[in-house]
Amino acid sequence: MVVTLQDVGLTIYGVTALTFMMAMYAFERRHRGFVLAFAVGCMLASSYGFLSGAWPFGVVEAIWSLVALRRYLVATREARPDRRCGDAPETPC
Image (cartoon, rainbow, N blue to C red):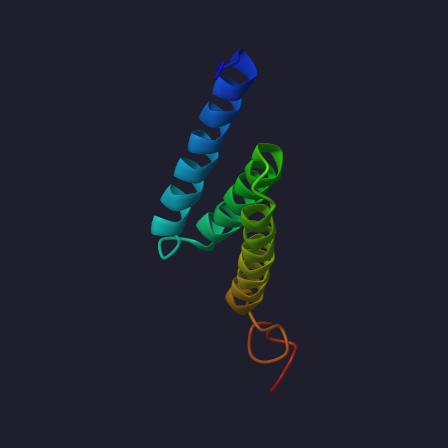
């Protein structure tokens, strides 16, 4: 079996994508920005799965990226101040 430079490059890309994804997962509780970074890491891992021929892995990681993106959007919405009640003096509850 001949190992090509393309194979080595794909392996390095995969290791980097998965390492980034797992590091962002570990930091998720520190800030919601890490949840978004985890979603990006899942997308990178998904692309690696498809590029390497492991399409089931690519599909699962694509689904996880959507789940993480939704978690980020929910966390962002919850972090916004509620403008309807009490934040603005001219807006009574």
